[in-house]
Image 1 (cartoon, rainbow, N blue to C red):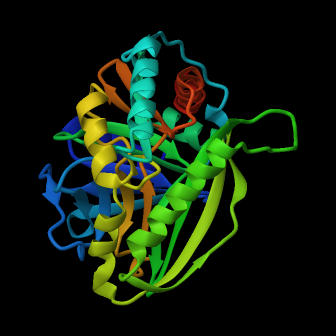
Image 2: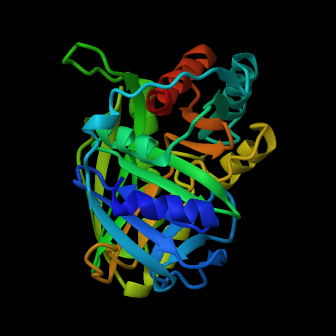
Length: 354
């Protein structure tokens, strides 16, 4: 066991907050270990530290760098890839409920209440002996292109995930973000064909980002859509690049974008209301955002923010893991197909535990 995971074990025993993360294609695991158990919230978004924001709240928790120790370790996950665990699965929201929910959303879209909504469900999996070190290293082995993390706070709980979606990234005055939508199960075929429903969904996400950024940034550049693989799935991705008008505009930009149409819908207000009234459970930190705010925690370079959307994630409570999965619904959505999309997405976390 390395110094990093010895520190994890000590913090777990003392019930102190910490986060481990490994960026896409990185060979380093970073640990941020808070020295007290206080729950800090952002006040002006000029703070420096690791942010862990929920889907629906005005308060954004974070681990402040000024009250934390930082450990950096090299990735060495080959020994953990083959370790197996057994688990049992219980769908907390049944396929019948979810398919009915999708049908209700499609009806609302056709009645022009909104143009898109992202619906989600959760599953519960028994995990008799959850281990942070094994699970973190297995995520790194399986999903090198994702943002992998394990977050713990005694007032929030234990969360971990491997998300494929960047929320936003800044370096000085340069801002980068992405539109990620459309889902297709990876097969042996080298040809990726997207249907109109998926192309429209992707365009809606791109349009939302661009319209949200207008007035807050300048010189917006948009790439052509392209296919990108994330674990066992393909998605459509568009890169968006812009220049900040002010270094202090990051708060307005984050609040304008969150929750993105990739996890909420369009228009944001109406689709979010539909989610909160009909989804049947509290998303908590699923589909929120997380990552480094105003600093690169390894190099300590300021004016750098690197945030991700909290997708492909789960919450650990004692010997149980709760998995969260969702999909975008448009007027052309088929309830059975959408449920199967969530099943495919759930494999990202199931592969880590099973």
